[in-house]
Length: 328
Image (tube, rainbow, N blue to C red):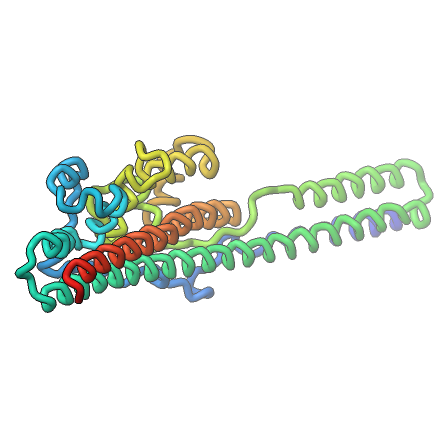
């Protein structure tokens, strides 16, 4: 009987040690210990346009009042010019083809100003892409960090289950009476199974993740003006002509993909605040979801470089026509 008591106590002691070792600390990892700052990845948000720059948001009206550009540029190129705030300058440049009294000085001024606008928007695209990259890498690292904590927890529980199983297996050597022997074997089997089941528990560690400006928020809520996206970038994301379908904007298409593939439907208020608000307690799955959505936005932001390059190419063709007309 004494051997039974000691054997049973040993099994219980081992199982409790493994359980406490794996689950003793809080499920919430302190953000201060990881030095997480809310504004770590945000872009500069200095979006002041010069007096010469103006973006027109009524596409139909814009195209109807730009006859000088029709035939010189495609619809998408005209809208890209609009995104850079260069419509007025383009009209002046196109006017040089019809007015032989214009001077070379005006030609140089207009083309240089348009090129400056293109460079400015490209810089805004690059800055936003870098901010998204920063956020993606940060969330991925936090996801990996939580995965490491969960892996170590599961290792401890697995080792505990093995030890309990081994201790239970050798019990008959020390306990010869049938009833105590059966009690120890059954108890050890239950404890070993319990420790094994704990490794399947999806509730792992969490981190309180708060952001001073959520790069996903404006995409989700569709505000008229964005505090995080430059006006030119925000215009391209919301103008249907820039999407492949031509009927829905890139922003709406991104939002629809999130609902269908990342969120599993319209999220509840708690999930919406977590993903698109100021943040909250993130587990590994939530971080992985955020990484996927940020990557989606980044791919569309990067595609804007192509539109700018195409517009710049057509601008150079227009400049060549002016030069050849006057044989400069």
